[in-house]
Length: 81
Image 1: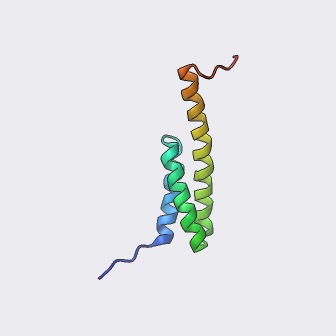
Image 2: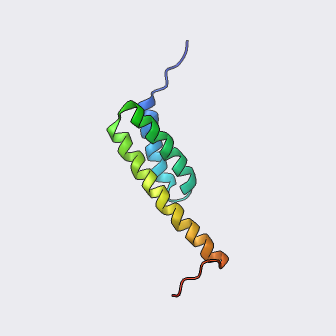
Image 3: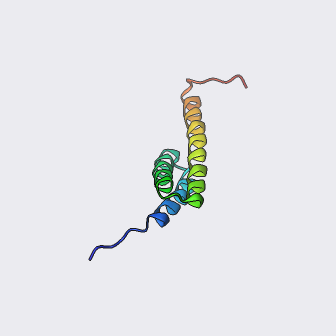
């Protein structure tokens, strides 16, 4: 007897996970958001697609901020402040 995986729930949870992870681990959040967005697009799920898009945007934004912060700490990027 095989178990059925509930893909709408998986896509919804990946959206929530991508939003939560975007604040601490933006690159893992990006992967979760892309996978969830792919599944929600395949299944035509509007609510989970919205969550995954929010997670994708947040992970890109916080990823850029993280890269800028790392470069500033290394001294490679100097802003005249």
